[in-house]
Length: 380
Ligand code: UD1
Ligand code: UDP
Image (cartoon, rainbow, N blue to C red; front, side, top):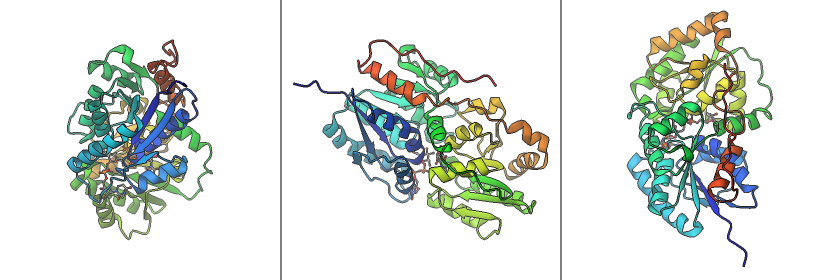
């Protein structure tokens, strides 16, 4: 009788998880010594499908759980309940989760209840403030406790895993898979069109709902109104709360384009073509430095200090006048702009997926020696 190949089940549900897991899913699918399976919770529906289509990923299980205006507690419960049947059917030897979403936390907890080991992709990100980002900081802490394997993207996140009590043998310093995805897609997209100066803006974080988001969009309005040659492009997250805030503050302005979330490839083109990026997104903070684009982060904390240290990302908070002041410095002072517009890669070198796959093979007994290659960020 043929021996059973170990099954690795990747579980994800939102846009950023899909971008960051796509290279891993594709790489696992090419292996003949294991079976790669995919379950999506569809915590996001349309924004997940955009990524699945681009990377030609057809999930083995689609729980289709998204509900309009979903609450954290409801979604968490539904993910846990519905994944049980997936575990029964596919009997994974290892479950992979990514990042800090409700899907990642609930899937890790569900796997733990079945005593299935969990590998955490993008382990060890921390702000140190349990309510910021909310609920992601707590999700990360909890996934670290639940996981058996920890794929830390950077030396900083590796150190954070250690501080959380994880033994060295369980941590792999891999780089972030978002750079693998970005390099694959950025090489294929057309050059951006030259149409004057563009602010690219994204905002969606829960802790920015309400007044902070009004301040953010107000700042975008001020910046555009003060410069006749400047346009803002705002792909608006499908969350109704975000949609409403964007429409209220920016709707109808002739040089502000409120558009639907872009597919990943056109979004990469938009990043390449942007003069300046304003965002509260985690993924965008990681991608833009690789493209040499200055980023102002619309938050009061970040779990991604590496690009701030490298000088291409600045944390500007969520006050309208602070955002306007910092963006104006860059838009109006070419020397200041040049200082910030350096292409750096503190988050990855395009080989994170390969390192993760080899660590998984070692864990599953498919190779005898522990892989030693690790991500070494270039000194900038
Ligand atoms: C979630 C994650 C956040 C991540 C973000 C990426 C949690 C707690 N939050 O936040 O960490 O940064 O995704 O975007 O896991 N919606 C749609 N269609 C979609 C996606 C969302 O209509 O394709 C709407 C729905 O009304 C949904 C709402 O947005 O209920 C909120 O989605 P949810 O995943 O709960 O929260 P996000 O704010 O997207
Ligand atoms: N993104 C995209 N289309 C958009 C906006 C963002 O494809 O219109 C991509 C972006 O390049 C990054 C990911 O979505 O890879 C980030 O997702 P998001 O900002 O929703 O979540 P976060 O990273 O903050 O968790």
